[in-house]
Each structure stands twice: as C-alpha cells, then as structure tokens.
Image (cartoon, rainbow, N blue to C red):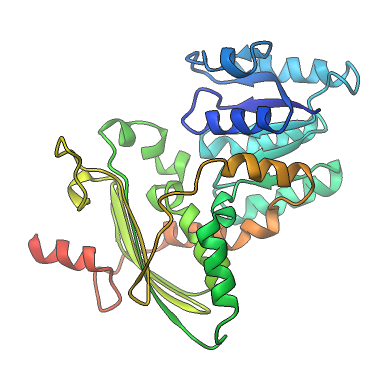
Length: 319
C-alpha cells in the first residue's frame, strides 16, 4: 500500500482520482485546496489531513518525509488548475514522490524539458492522465488503423460542444494565462488521442479563436482533421427534455461515426493500476500534444476557408 497526497481536491476531476487511489488499495494522507468544500474526503479517506494553504500542506508532507518509509508520501495526484501543475510536480519531486498529473501536464513545451532534468536529478517520475488511450472503442480503432494501408489518409471531423454557463469564463478556466485557453483546457484530450491514432502533426491552422469557441484544421501523418470546440450551448444540436442544450461529442472518420459516449467508467482506476505498475504515460508521451496546444495558442486566426469545420462555415453563413 502506498500513501498519496492530492492537490485540487475540491475540483471537478478529483473524485475520479480519489476513487482510483482507493480502488487500487492505497490511501490518501494529505489533501490541498484553497476551497474547503471537501466533504467527499469523509466517504473515501476520512483520515486524510486537509490544508487550504499550500505552505502548510508543503510543511506537512515534508514532515511525513522525515517520519520514515511507512508514513511518507509516495505519490502525489495533481488535480489543481493547469497553471499550477508544474509547481505541484516539483513539490512532489522535492519530497521524493512520483506525480500523477491531470491534463495538460504543463502549458508550454519548455516546461517539459525542465521536468525531464528534474526527473534525472530526483529519480522521481511524472505520469500523465491520458485515459482516452485506454478506452475500448479507441483501442479497437487504433488496432484497425495500424492494420490498414499505412499510406492511407483519413478524413476526420472532430466536434466537441460542452455547454458551460457564465461562471466558466469568470473562473481560472477563462483566463488564458492560467488555463491555456479553450483549446488547451478541453481540447488537449482529443489532440493527444488523434496524434496517438494518426501520427505527428504536419500542419496546423487556426481559423477561429474566441473565448467560448475555436476551430481549425490539422494535417497529421495519416489524417486531415477539421476540428471545432465550443462551450456555447447555442452551438449544440442536442437538447434535453427541458430543451436545454446538452453536450455533443462527435468524431467522424471517413464519414463513419466513432461511438465512444460509453465506456468511461473506471478508466482513471485502470490508468492508476497501470501507472503504479510502471506502465503509465510519461513526458515523452505528452510532448506532441503539449507542443500542439502551444502552437494553437500562439497562432493568428486566419478566418474560415476550404479546410474549415462545417460548424464554423455554417455559423459564418448565419452571421
């Protein structure tokens, strides 16, 4: 059994990490978050010490480090806002712990170079949460692609619309310096998956980049990808019984729809199981997607064109 500390424990994604930690037979001994809505700790790790201040949290885990192998923190799960990932990984290394970090691992490619040096110096590792690579439908698709003509180029349409209220842009997620922007915060999952499936980036175009929606075109080694991301409910073609917009997730490959709405249950736990066994996803795995989100963020939008996603063209037509 290993001891875990967790940062960002009051956040949206933390419950999946807590479930994975407990589900793999381990225990949470310390938790950090500036917000104190952390009653979830009672249901999974009631003995965990909670700290709203990073200074006290850091002091406590350092004290545990000096208290012997049985009490020290062996792993740190990082669920904090994107801009804090790098600092919290370094905190883990300082106490001799490996880190399991949510996406994006860092915001900029050069941060990865520094972390690689720190891995060598500390003997610790940082592992990324690339759970889509464990999804049964996506694994089956990769096996299919790998078995087909390597010279074939696929036509991909990626659409992800996840309606969010005004709170989103008022929070850290709406601050580009803290989240990396929309393409980073909600797009990095899909960019990693597409690069894993279809090869490295050959060309990147950004057609529209707004706080609440963005879209562009990617040429990968084995695919041409038109992509569109949005948090504006008006963009969603799906409505619930109450007529409120619902999340719409679609990946079409040569006109065929990849169905992966289901199958997400337990992916974090499986990822933890593999990571704890030394078979996780490290810095080299995330480098291509981190480079891509940086390039998208720094690109000047060109406006719509022949390679634009249909939703962008339709929106331009109606404006």
